Image (cartoon, rainbow, N blue to C red):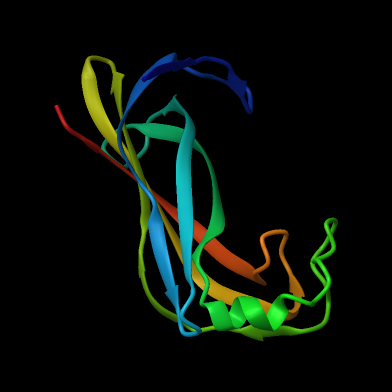
Length: 160
């Protein structure tokens, strides 16, 4: 896939950047309650914005992502089966409990971009840092409500 972006950001003229997705791997978050969540990160756009001490180039990297349940134990689904649906507009204020993260594999997306006849690999890693669960409500698929605090790391390096 090749995507082309041009435009202005903060008064800096962006040089046209073409990139190719070379790796896209979901992350898995295993929780102490037996549930497993999936975390995805996506590089939506890459723009070369000039010099930086990091390899002599600087990139504006636009990302997006999200979390969904991959597996929830039946006993947790049975516990919430008669609970009301979670409010659609905002999370409920009562009933939250922290759930320990037992292990996780980070979500990864990598792209390759060429600037001034040099190729660079840009990598975005996504990891969960906290998870909370609400057993007073269920989701539209009959599972407890999970809320995940997650973040990204952006890296780039020359590859040619």
